Amino acid sequence: MRVFSTFLASYVLSQFYRSFLAVIAPELAAELALSPQDLGNLQAVWILGFVVTQFPVGWALDTIGPRRTVALQMLSAVAGAVLFATAHSALALEIAMALIGAGCGSIFMGAIYMFGRTAPSQRFALLCSLLLGLGTAGNLLAASPLALAAQWAGWRGAMLAMAAATALSALSILVLIRDPQRILGHGPRGLFGGIGEILKIRDLWPLLPITAVSYSVVLAARGLWAGPYFSSVYGLDPVERGNALLVMAAAMSAGAMAYGPLDRLLGTRKWVVFGGVLLTALCFIALALPGLPLAAAVVIMGLLGGFGMTYGVLMAHGRSFVPDHLLGRGITLLNVLFIGGAGILQPLSGALMNRLTDTPAAHAYATLYLIFAALLVAGLAVYVFAKDNPPKA
Image (tube, rainbow, N blue to C red; front, side, top):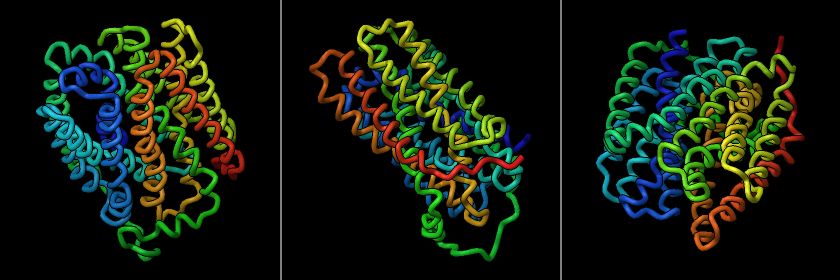
């Protein structure tokens, strides 16, 4: 319980940092003259900072342990949040987001490494999904509470407060977490050692495309485009946008927790993921319908967030094929695809929206959401050939 709650506090902050731009993006763009491409780049460099740390994190988890790996890396997020709060240019914001992304890169990985080493295998998806679901409270913080805090203290003051909270959380990891016993004498130990061995696991191959797109489109919708969508298409002000995004954030939290026990209850991981991703694609298609009323858009965005949280079950599906001595590098390789797919998608989506600035906002977002749906369907076309590896009773 101590391990779960300590990592949960840090993961709430990680979730906040990957989604807060959606609320303050219009104000940020107005104050610093940022284009849609600039906004897409901000989210992309957060992801880039996150992704480039993953292979070192995998090595560090397997060889040093999660306690020091996570606590020390979080100091980068502290520095990034302070820089963001004091930035006056797009370049400074990009550097800040890269530092924040790098600082968040080991939090979820450290937690699920601990789960994978210390918890029964049949509980792995449940623990991952609970952490993801409860941690998505960070999305709640990055909705109405952030909008209200930004109105009261400005977005700069809000970010300084988050920097302080991040420093405190890093200290709690260092003090409260104890590393599991290391597994010695198995395979290569270098920084990239074991990656080739993991890539030789053919059962993982059909999982890779859906891993790359399933979470990235949800992250793009919630973390970047949902706020501008409600602002441009429906004319919502910051607090109204925050309230609309609060619905999606709450649904994401509930959805992640609902997925947790499904692999055990239904006796399958593959088809839980398949059904969730298919429903997510249908939600994106529904958002592209012309003349969609605001209330319907808010509800569908919430359903999209809830159905889209297959992350924990898909991670459990992949983890089931990875041996324990390569666990750190195995889960971080999967996470590179989860988050790295978004790193590619974000600037591309920003470029697309830049090209569509002269078209009606509703048409531009309909185009974006249909592309997201198509990516999910393409991933499912490969994933359908994956081997199911259900949890043992």
